[in-house]
Image 1: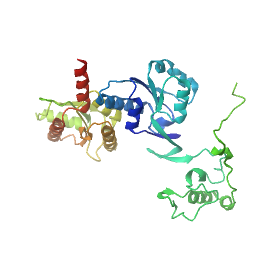
Image 2: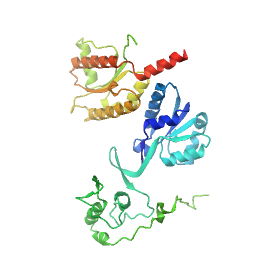
Image 3: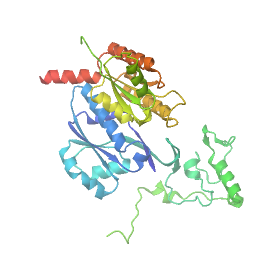
Image 4: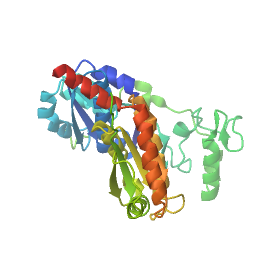
Length: 222
Length: 146
């Protein structure tokens, strides 16, 4: 999922200070899973902001609402009346959601409440780690299911490098060496010939190498 | 503010802390009436939102009372609650509320005397700290409005 973390409170207070009626919108998908912007976090932030503004001598109105997703126009449309009645909108969704909201409600200031971090997976309850960087040409089939783009600090195509020490990356002993993991996995799968194969330099044009990307499904788009 | 009487909310788990409160009652040990008890099935039923809302609604102090370490009826609810309390204390500090206003206590069902002592200790601590900054701010706002 897309992971995110709540912005520091001072930043959020600065955003909403000029306004009286705030609409605080959460998202029921990724940010709920990583406990950053779901219904509960909306409740926590609304309560916190109310108390912080009270201490600054202002009694503001914060309306709480959580959408199923904020990255689909159909869901964002549900906010039409609430957005109309608000002076400003603050979104606890990832950057995709914030932008969809801002694009629909152009006459209201829309603020992000979280910093979107990375595409990742849960390692254990409460711990999320980066797993995918959206390179656009997935090679997980050749690396035993471990991604060298997301998990190797140097994004090596033919690792490991000389910095790999006792299974850890040289940047941090807590970070696993992706190529060590790849070797271990390929050995267990009996696919060590995949390790020896030389991978060519990555063509980044499928990734962020050529600007903002778009997918159009002709069978679905009108 | 003279004659400040703190309002304290105590979330007590049914199996230990609430029973300890009950024992204090049967032993006729008195504790300050400032402490309002809310019974929960386990201390970890108390969510971060309950704690923060308690302060928003005017509590000067809040505490969560669970079982002793290792004795939770639901395995480790008391440990999870303790972690949660620590997390909310950090949030409260960000909000300008003293983290000492929120506390985690552990006790067994037979500790009636200790329940009363905890209630007294928390009441005195909050009395010294004074009214919650939220209550002060609300009073000032209302004072201005009036």
